Image (cartoon, rainbow, N blue to C red; front, side, top):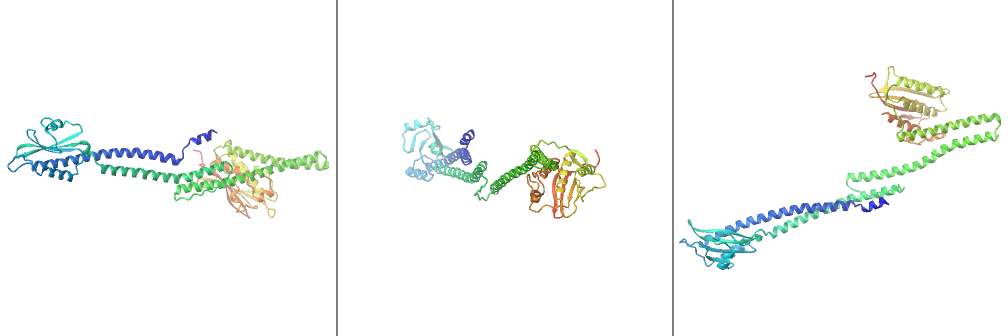
Length: 471
């Protein structure tokens, strides 16, 4: 219930990324827009002031007569109107011409002397109206100042740039929408395979492993994710089928000796067999109980190893002496009729790093497997050899038994796997090689099948090599 509540509060990757990216775009471009508008207004103001200065200078030149007097020509209004239209002056603007005593001679649009006094100070050097900029150009005749031409401009009209502002707004809006749309499309494309993978994971959690993800993309990483998930689902399906079959096989293998022991003991107890055969029945029951004990022991050892509760030492071992002792002890209780167990040891000592007890467990298991692989049509032969190469020491167990088929070879180290030939010859859980390989790897080594054919098999235990003498 809590998980469903948490999921209901989660946001999809599409919404999460697009909303936040859109907010970031808006904030970022708003800062850019404000800065751009400030720059446009400042640039427009400076440009218009320079243009107004040129206009004032031209008018000042036109009101000086040839004899050096300040005279307003009759065509002044037409001249001013044409210049204002040419320079594209818009908004609130007032142009007036006054003599050096401050007397108003000309204004456009027309104003009175009283109105001028309200708008300018007495010497016409400063403007009284807030929000108005005064640009004054003196009217000169040589070195003599005859008067002045003044343009009163609204600061708002000076900074007004409607076309530039509109262009900036359109560009910023286009960039915001383009950026958002790009991320939206990318997020949607990314979210689709992730959503399908999540849905597939939910199906696997519910026990459905037959999953097909209909996702085709050109992005390598996404396609690798989808392909890997599909392979994982297929592998899980195989493992589930294998687990079911293995569980049935393990149950059968454990049940068989129990049933056999029970039947033999009941036959003895109920006097079904003669007294002279009762001992034989009890011997068979003991053999079956021994097999059952070994299978349970294998299962417990594997579980302990998988749980990490098996301690593995890391010691310096002299492998020639160790292998000789292991083969000697094994031979005392595993006599093979018409068989030979030989040793192939180097002339000099070989030192490896590992756990002597675990090495013994591995080699004994390999020797037992070699004994079980004996062929009836020829004398059994088992050879154990020790070699060193590079930074590793190898212990090989070779036999001339039935061998392992190429189809079964890739699976022999899988837990609970037993080849068809072995199922017919011996009982077991198929954990011996799996457990031995785990022990080898726990020592920093490896257990592998070197070769196998109808002439026999060779298994190799590799361990890290130690120095030939103590430091």
